[in-house]
Image (tube, rainbow, N blue to C red):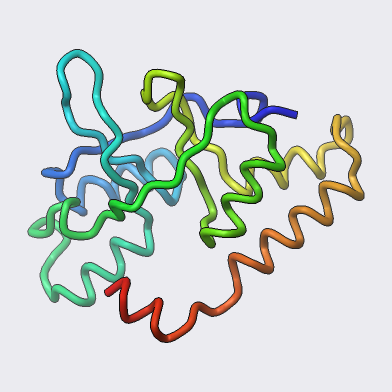
Amino acid sequence: MKVEALMTRIVTTCRPEDTLERVARSMWDADCGCVPVVQANGEAPTLVGMITDRDICMAAYTQGRPLSEIHVSTAMSRELCTCSPRDTIQQALKILQTKQLHRLPVLDDHGQLVGVIGLADIVREATHEGARASRADMAEAIAKTLGAISAPRSRREVVAAA
């Protein structure tokens, strides 16, 4: 199965200059925990980062200011891991495992954001009654991914990320 079959196609985005208050409100309205950050670049916006609900919480804590005073650019992750709509679900799961991520932006051949695929999307498909993939194979892949995502990072990685 390909990423394009399960990805969310209508994606809420934000800009680096937006406030965390605006992004938190967008996450609440869209019932999502992650928003791609895009920057105007000619005719089409370019993906420049990702911001999660956890990033917002940590920015509020570490910066000690209201969300209305903190810009996305100070809290977003700039290290981007992406996939293609034509990648297999197994390829996406491997990226999620190795990078300890819950979601991936999906970019087309021109580098344009066309969706987001998350572990939750894959779990929903695997538990769906008419799932196309083998349930046992998907369950094993999901369990491995969740275990990898949940594994504690070494102290060195935590300090380097700060």
